[in-house]
Length: 422
Image (cartoon, rainbow, N blue to C red):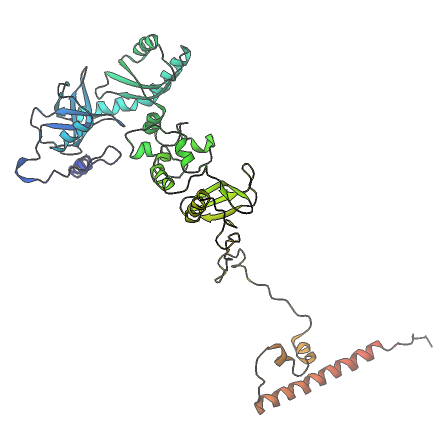
């Protein structure tokens, strides 16, 4: 590897990491040493982070690979944050003041990085084999991911289980098979989807794999507030749980519903009683039906009109009609007009010209005088003497030709007497 290649590698490693665990250090350029701090935030595979003490006063920057203290041995991670902002991150992560703080040994050497890459290469094969071992032991669990320590002496197995699992025998078998120290960590279905990643039904990367770090329980009431169909297949995400995005806009819907009339109140009019059928929160419109269970005689009115009718019913008054105009509101549908013709499927096909029978001279001869002007539509007649002379000359020539051809045709049709031998 040349000097330029090494510089490029160092430049790539020093670039800030991107992802859901990335944090911008907005205190970095404060002069006077106010932003200095002896704690460093280090990120490992996927969502695992840790806070380590820079006791050796190493000159660390975001993106550096470091060797940190672990039990046993050491681990390899990437520096994601330095300075005073680390203290705020520790407070956010609820790190207790009396918690054990480990230290940073050194910047990762080439030998450390080679060993780290070798350990990472074994993770996929280890996960597949461990799944087969758990299945052979008839354990009701699923091993979703495996993470090796930087020095290869320890492996963390992330598993999912709906109930409590006794995996003591599993740990013994795994330790004998892979010759490493085993650590088991239970995660939920949402955490597993975030670690594995994928594409959601919206066509974008999963929120749990791109930016979400805290998972809040999602209830079916969020779908009810937004008038979403309670179909389990449509409401469930890749993790087979309710989609996290159901909580994104539910607060806005709840606030909007508070400014709408109650759906339980029936509207009394002179002709009938109307019951709530559906609500359009964005347009502030409500649709009512004359039957509770079946949509019949649907009428759509504004929310303000509903408030007025409710107040009238409280005073013992009944309006003649539900609408102000006394007629059902009819929505005007604007018809689509294709002016450019860009939506036509056959717009690139060439129009086939119809072939006319006969020779061009016969077509010109059989045409009647004035036919060309009539076919032209609103085209004005030509009054030039030269053009009229040319037309007369052409008509005479065509008439002579038609006469000659007609005489020849008559001669050909005359019956011929059979020749007799004299």
